[in-house]
Length: 59
Image 1 (cartoon, rainbow, N blue to C red):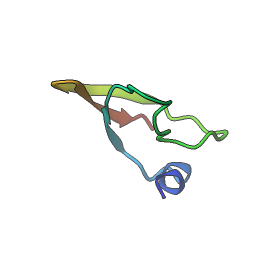
Image 2 (image 1 turned 120 degrees about the vertical axis):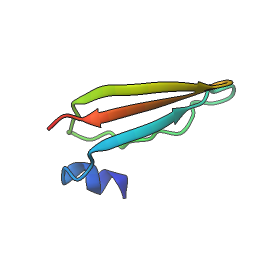
Image 3 (image 1 turned 90 degrees about the vertical axis):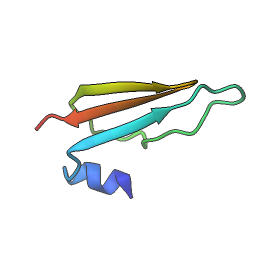
Image 4 (image 1 turned 45 degrees about the vertical axis):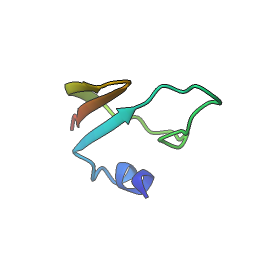
């Protein structure tokens, strides 16, 4: 569903929490498609082993 919103340019911000991967490759957040988002990092917070990234989508 996120993919549809991104394609239609309905996303203004993304807040992504990153966790380290111990086993395997992790879970992809986005599909591999022919689109690209122009992002600007608005902020970052860390919680123990996790990092939260707050991006604004440039229009």
